Image (cartoon, rainbow, N blue to C red; front, side, top):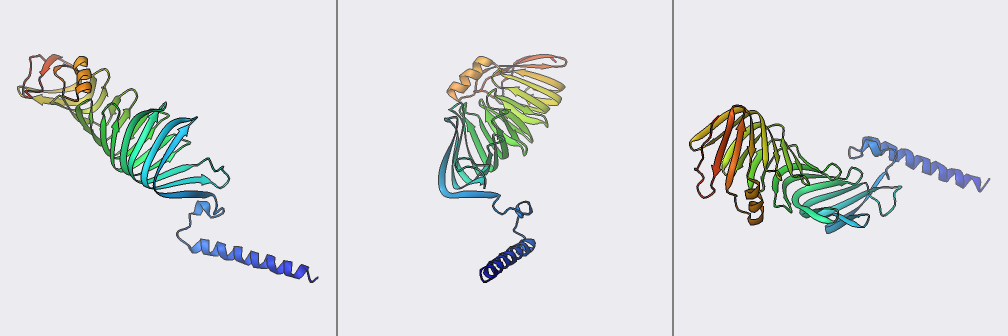
Length: 276
């Protein structure tokens, strides 16, 4: 009986502490209700002023240097696995494809989800690809699995030496296709174009515009329900090598005809002939 009594007292004390802990949880606004039944469901490692590299099957996948890095993992997972990586004030982020560098970025913060193979990047983003494409935005979702960069809050950028801005963009880094389903404004070698819907195949040098389309240049102004601009591919490849605007022809095909517009970067107001 003497041995049983202390055991009962210990159990009562433990029971009382558990009850007290649950009461505190109920009135503590900082407690996440999804974790209330298991306070150890999400644990992490926090590092200040660190750089981390991630490899997939031994091949470099991405690396990020940030003021703060938090790796979160399940309490039941291994030490070499994590469910989420959080980064604050990213000064140097690098994304790889098949072990080769594909893009670098800076941002206020970012989150990586290894299950989705997806980066969500937020705040003051500047992303530059190895092909010298530069995108600036407030938010970006980079999906490795789908080969896409989704810019839900719009972006301004310079791709293959051409400038473009749009409120919503889907960009494929590998195929280099820019989709602007909510409209875009662009300048192709100084020739401005606005469209309600624009798709630009950068490698093919082909821009397709749908919906209300308009553009202007000295001596030429047009409005159409659709338009197709075929940039000079040779000039485009030359521009990518020299990082200078390319000279050549912009073939503008609309619903009523074809215009061949001469583009001379040394004379922005020059224009060739055509018919609509």
